[in-house]
Image 1 (cartoon, rainbow, N blue to C red):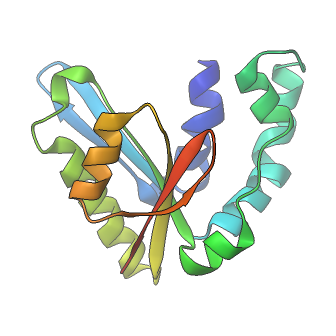
Image 2: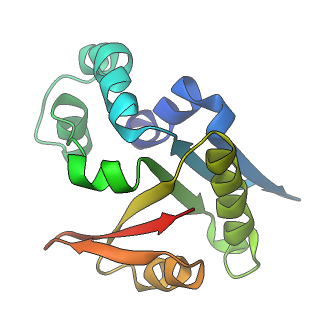
Image 3: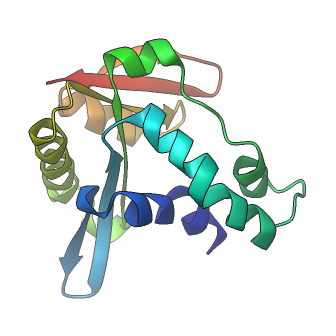
Length: 155
């Protein structure tokens, strides 16, 4: 529940029009979530989402709780070029079937229809399958840190 409260639920609550799920015979098998304006989204999180979450999850050494209490802000140079961002997650049973690409395409279309000119995402270096997936979808690496790669795509 904690992971969802920090990394998925805020999108569904603050931007439900940019939250899409895939469903198969066993139920929900994946999702893609996005924010049209990353800077505005992070400001809304700080005003509306994080205060009650901080009350629910007191500060500890847990990495996710630390994220709730001290959320990172996205670099302004990045959001000027790629103002939107996304998160996608699929259950293992769905991977390799085109579901992830369909979800991402659905979100990219929704972002473009709302005036976005580009989208970015973060992926850890060790997640080689995701890196290949994003490259296959036309995302390019725009930044690298010791912890992660940042990919972007312009519309």
